[in-house]
Length: 382
Image (cartoon, rainbow, N blue to C red; front, top):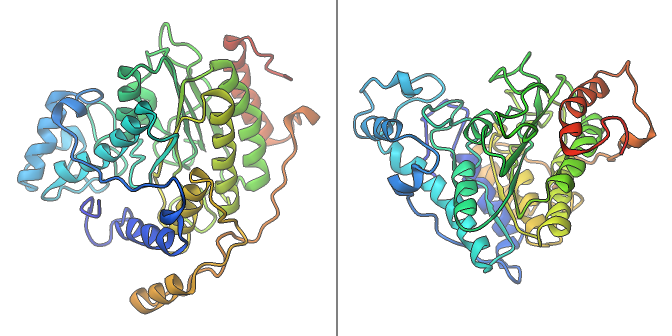
C-alpha cells in the first residue's frame, strides 16, 4: 500500500501508513482476540467499473505506464495528482482493501473492518481529484449493494467535503452520504453546502454540514450529534461505511478546523454505536486525509482500529516507547507521549436550544431544514 506515492514533497505521504501500522502493532491491536489481517488485492477493471468509467480507468492505465503522457482532462498529472509509474495498481490496491473489507462483512466473517489506507473520497466517476485516483469507499458501497445490502449509510468526517462519493451516489436512494467538513467557502473542494441534498428520486440522501473555519471540539461534536444519529435512525441502513480523514486536527497543515484526536476517536465510538444499534454492528471504516503524518495520523487511526477491535486503547494510553524511539531515531521528531491530546470533551446537546447568533448553530439549522422534513423529522427538535 506504500506504493501509493506521489513523490517527495507531496502532502499525501505513504509514511503515514507505515507509522500507523507500526503504532497499531506496538499497541498490540493486531494481536487482539478476533482481529485478523487481510492482504489487499489489486481491484480488477470490472470491479473499478462499478463506480468509475472505462475511459477514465484507461486514462489511469496510460499514465501508469508512461507518467509523461497528458491526461489532465481526467485530473491526472496535475499538482494535486502527479503522475507516477505504477499509479493504476497502487490506486486499485487501495480499492482492493476496501472491497476485501466489504466481502468480509457480507460473508459474516467479520462485523467491523478497517482499511486505513483507503478513504479516497474526492475521486469522481470520471476524474481524479484532491490526491484521490480511485474511490475505494464508493467501490465498497457498490459491492455491498451488489451483495445484498438494501441500504448503505456513508458518514464522512474528513475536513474536506466528500464530494466524489456524494456525486457517485447522487441519484441512488439506497445510499445516504453524510459529510461534516469545513465550509467550501474556505477550503477545497468548494462544495458541500446544505442545499446539496440528492438528485431526482433520491432527495434527502445527500447531507452536508458545512462548518465554519476554526470550529473546535465542542462545536463539531454538537453539530455531529444534532444531525447524524437522527438521520441514521430514520434511514435504517443495513451497513455503515465511514471515512475518517483526520485532517480536521488542530495541527494539520492543510485545513482550518481545530479538532483533537480525542474528538476523532469519539466520532468513531459514536459510529460504532450506531452500527450496533441499527445494522447488527456491520461497519466498514476507512482512512482519508491527514497531513501531520507523524504526530496526528498514527494516533488517530490506531484509536480508530482499537474502537473497531473493541480494544482498550484510550486517549490516556501512553504511546509505546518503542514507537517513539523509532520516530526519533528515523525522523528526528519528538512524538506525543499520550494517544490523546489531553482535552476534556464536552458539547451542548441540540435539545437544550438553538442559538441564532451562533455560526455553528446556523450551519446545523440550515442542514436540518433542508433534509430533516424529507425523512419525517422535525427540523427544530426531535
